[in-house]
Image (tube, rainbow, N blue to C red; front, side, top):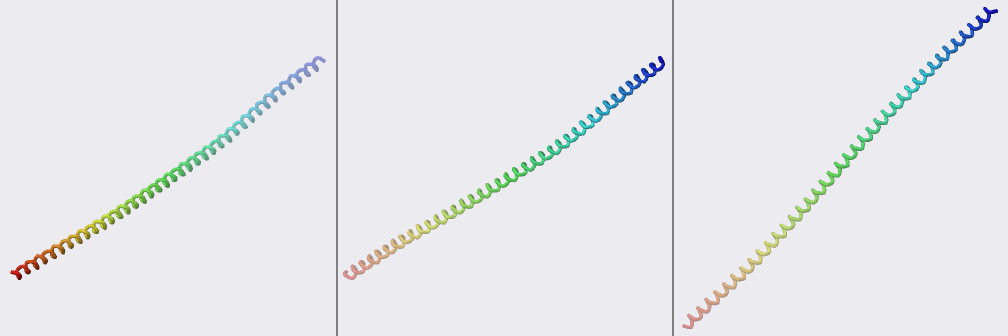
Length: 140
């Protein structure tokens, strides 16, 4: 009888030990699984972050490119405007010069005309004088 009790006790203890071992094993397994899951999650997050970062970088680059293009366009427009203005100015200057030339020519012509008139008058006067002289001579 005593032996039997001892045996049962031993069995119980063994069973308890086994149970404990199993529990510990299970716990370990669970921990491992959790760790793995965590790692996986972290990896996923990292990947997502990387992709996001890449996307952001690409967006920034695109924006920069767009800005550069806009700036270039603006510069080109400004240059064109300046060129147009210069051309206009040149044209105006040319016109002014032409006008001045015309005016000068007109003035010259006028002067010439006056000179001619004067000459004619002088000639007429001379002729008259001559005639008078002749008449006088005749009279004499």
